Amino acid sequence: MIEHVLVGVALVAGLAGGYLIARSRLRGRRSEQPDAVHRILLPFTGTEISRRAVDAALRLARAEDATLMPAYLALVPKSLPLECAIPNEATKAMPMLEAIEQRATAQGVPVDARIERGRSYRHALARLLESETFDRVVVSASATGTAGLSGDDLVWLLEKAPAEVLILRPGPEDRRVVSALPANGDGETSYRSR
Amino acid sequence: MGGEDPDREHPQAGKADQRQGHYKIFLGMAAGVGKTYRMLQEGKAEAEAGRDVVIGYLEPHKREETSAQARGLEALPRRPVQVRDVAVEEMDLPALLARAPELALIDELAHTNAAGLEHEKRYEDIAEVLEAGIDVFSTVNVQHLESLNDQVAELTGVRVRETVPDSALGSADEVVLIDLTPETLIARLQAGKIYPGENIDAALNNFFKIENLAALREVSLRQVAEDVESKRLVFSQGEPLGTRAEEGVSADAPKAVGERLLALIRPQPNSQRLVRRAWRSAQRLGTDLDLLWVKAPGKPIEGEEERQVTALRQLASVLGAHLLIEEHDDLVAAVARVVRERCSTYIMVGESEPPRGLARLREPLPQRLMRATPPGVDVRIVAHRGLKDGEQ
Image (spheres, one colour):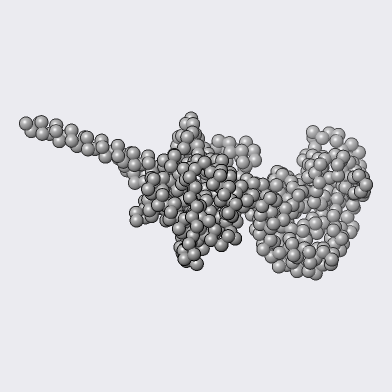
């Protein structure tokens, strides 16, 4: 009788152990390789991005178990080769990507960031569309109309993007941005209101 | 000043027996720092010490101080060349080879020769002079170096058309940096010592700005530091640095003076944070960044891994970092070899996930790296954000 109990206990322990190992391996694999299909592209320019756009992209990513792909569009002057190093642009992009990643990680959304070079923002976006795959694009229309993607760029994006495009126009009262201004001396996150 | 030597009359004769000339380059951050002046000064000193010195080509740029320094040195006549309707003057290479001095002073090695001459570029002329066993002193500005041309153009907004391959500098036996603070250089410009009066304002408004000159000065200093570093490391087979041959660098090479960062990455999105951290540190230290992925031998790169490698390659290219992919089944051994080869002083690794099972008994990676790499190499662990503050 005791032997049967011991065998039973060993069997249960073995099954439980096997389940735990399998689960941890599966979790490890998931954390290593985010889903290859579900990606939400969040292109941006300059040193700040509408917080509303970031939050919308994060909400979607969380709801769809997707990876957020923030992409900084960097301008390369015509005097330089397109594939050259652009440390000045990278200096602007890094804290922005860091800020977005901090916010995404806090919400449990995996991030796979990019910096794409182009002669214009539209050119950089076109290169991105060519080289990456994603299911949605979340883009913020410029509130001021002076920086970032123009109205024409957004129309172009609607025509060309092989994915659903969500264009967010910030309301007049919504002036919160995710900014690249150093907040803690280390060039890290800074959320502020204009 | 010797003309008795039979080789002088037939400079190409007995070429195989001839030693290669000694090559010294005076490198500057911009026009007007005093490269040509210093070259002439040293040339004069050599002549006074009894050597046969000839000016192969001098571009005094109407600078009185430079012209004064050249007085007393023998100068070869320039060779007139007709380019369409314009008469230009170039260095007379055949005459220099025939004259065969012990030391030739040849200004502006980045110069592009008029069409139809022996070589397209002056540094190629110099190579021939060196091959003839003649020592050469020459000059160049840092923005002419091919690998730095883009960087300098981005820093200063001015692109220099005449470039020379880095090997033109790398082949020199000695590189002397002629350093001047930007403030002093601007003061020299304002005093009319660099350009004639009518060009001073234009120069001040364009290229000769404090920020441009400071950036160029930094690039020049780093270039010379790297040159010193590459010459310090001698490959056992006598090969130049950069061939990355297995066990190429002697293990007892003395420690590097400058810093160099090496970040250990894997083709995963979470490596990007490590790259960003490493790049920021490299920026602060003003040093180069290498990214190293040690992959399992024979395993093809495909699917998601291939996509991530492409992304990392792109990121490295944007940042001006070097992505190295090494096939090795022993991560620590591969890293130790790269550290020796690249003279890395910092290794940055991502935080590992907590070990499970038998892996708990294994010594952690940072400790193994510290033991395997030369003394003085620091290992820094970059926290994985998801492990620390991934929760809401």
